Amino acid sequence: MLRLLCFGAGAVGTVLVLRYRRRRSAGGGGKNVLSVRIGTRKSDLAMIQTYHVESLLLGLFPDIRIAIQEGVSAHGDNVLDQSLKALAAKTPGLFTKELEAGLLMGQYDFVVHSLKDMPTTLPDGLVLAAITEREDPRDALVVHEKHRGKGGLAGLAHGAVVGTSSIRREAVLRRDYPHLKIKLIRGNVNTRLAKLDSGEYDAIILAVAGLVRLGKEFEARIEASLDPPQFMYGVGQGALGLQCRAGDEKIINMLKAIEHPDTAARCKSERSLLYTLQGGCQVPLGVYSQVDGDKLTLECTILSEDGTQSIQKSASGHKSSPEKLGITLANELIKGGAGDLLNSFRVGDNPR
Image 1 (tube, rainbow, N blue to C red):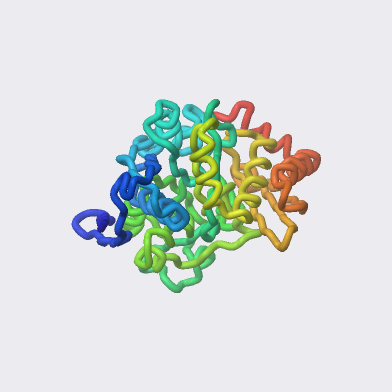
Image 2 (cartoon, helix red, strand yellow; image 1 turned 90 degrees about the vertical axis):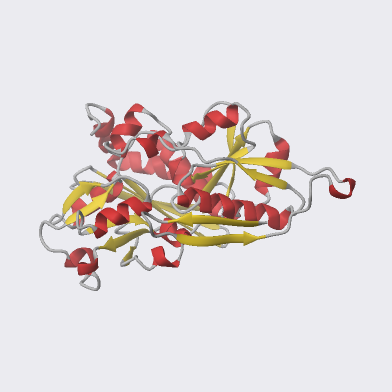
């Protein structure tokens, strides 16, 4: 089966041949063929991520029949004139709730999320069944053509406009680059790049993983990868979360077969940390995690929104107990004063 998708903004698109594959007909040779319906958002990146998951499954289970359902537009995709912080305060699960509703109604057997979009508290009846291997989780600086090769963020002139939709990235920029002007940017990757290229922004910050997955043309736009500990990344950034119904053991076992154990350990520790600290509350919080043999290390930085205050701590443990490590580090952060910083976002913090 040949599947072609066209990606790109305006009249210019990149045709990606995602795969050429022969598939046995259903019921061929008298065999019972498992049919699996996958739900996804409709963006180019979401579709590429879903076809990646499909290829992982077919590598282990070549006889299954996979039907990728028509992609959906999430609430966060449709409302582009507000910050993610403001939207999340009103509607948790900005990029997941439509797919989760489809799961609960039986429209899908499982759905593919960018793990960073998944709330740490899931709806009753649904589980995070597996986490696939993580792409580079760092943030990426992308600059207007006139700023290429001129020193990155530090090389931008006073008052240069940098676009981001993340309060974590904004807080780091305010802390370390106070000479820059931070401006909200929303929309998919193509939309954001078009706004950058039009001159509306001097630079924007995106996730390395998304640009890499979209292909070489997009990856080539990366001016610099922004490294921890200065730029800690978002919880779950770069990984995919596969969600299904809690009682569907056949699907759960199938998805577990394509889970990447080290990625899962890292991301579970990060999600446990976030859940223990503040659940779904929007705060400037970044993490760094690493697996070395059986040792799992987790670091976290929490910042004030203006970047003037920050708390950073780390902890290590055995990778077989990632949730325990996340709880341990969260408690250490609270003991170190993170509770007061977090409460400043919960009490009297008007979304904007």
